[in-house]
Image 1 (tube, rainbow, N blue to C red):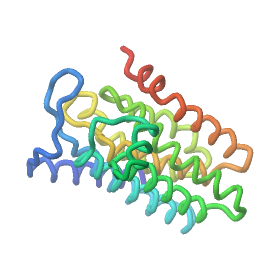
Image 2 (image 1 turned 90 degrees about the vertical axis):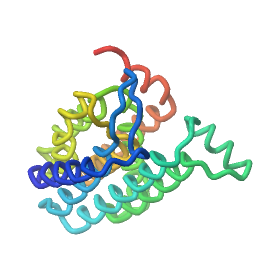
Image 3 (image 1 turned 90 degrees about the horizontal axis):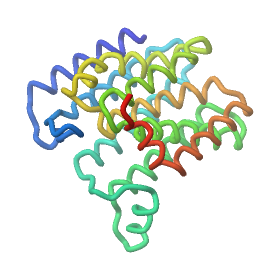
Image 4 (image 1 turned 180 degrees about the vertical axis):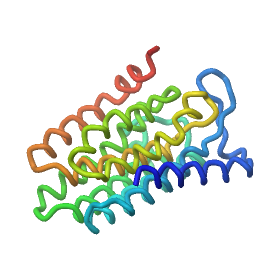
Length: 240
């Protein structure tokens, strides 16, 4: 399954590189122009890998919903995003009648997390906790995507323990591994598309494998990370 995720990611990435689109190019922290094609490529790879996993139908469906919606919301932000950062800024704009790309991500990924959580769990409390874990993991991976390789390495490191509890985590790991060299080599970036999609599928793997106590711990940690998002991003951007 990780092999399928990696292969699909590479195929989509190479295909997109043949058709340059300036909307999918950015200037990175070092002033280099890099593409964002790793984002849609890892979204496709992670979702296809999850659909081929040995997990149950509900787990596969939850991962597909979470990954596709998170990737789509991230893509909208990559193409139409503005300079505003943080929940407060986007919610403030929403109060003034402006729907920012950040608000689209907030509500879109949050809703997808709750739908995926409802597919995974039976009890209402567990459904809600699973939703927080899925959306929160998507947000966390995006928070650390501030320097080359940070988000990719986070997905690989965070997913490794989950491989012993189920194969679903292998999907985002395979997709991330497929673009790791290009990301670290500053030829591509995950952008919001890839960071959110990888995080959402990884979060689904966490939620699927966890009981209530585990969900509570994961959810609490992710809420804290979101509350101190600027600090998390600053630490992730520190020199290795």
